[in-house]
Length: 194
Image (cartoon, rainbow, N blue to C red; front, top):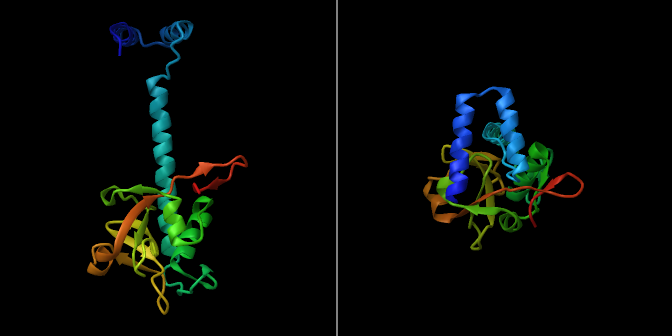
């Protein structure tokens, strides 16, 4: 950052502290605009960040609550609804579609390819966890709900359930964590990157 720009920022901050009324603020904004320095006001940025963080937190809470509502639904290979049963990827797809209106690909390995890889220690509720349960990468998927727990449709003869990532079976087969990062398409609906 140039010394001139740093001095300008310090002068603006000093002026704002000396006379924080609306008139001085408008004068400063007008002067900055005239100089071609279109800066977003810091307090406006703060509100945007807080609003965005609250939206993300609300969506994560809704998603986790939605997953809890499916506990006990029977496993069904190829299943994608609570009425008929779920397989692992059908469960993840249904939860995301019904909760946040996001359409993920159908198969677990496709869901992995359409999401952003994150480190396990970065996991947040709503992130996806993948496992190698059939001697191939990304053959099983679940939804992380926090506290090292995830919800998934495990296998034939079972039901949607809560499991612990720390359990030896899941630790040995853990394939990675992924975050769903939606993109807006032209129609305004959300879809995962393909």
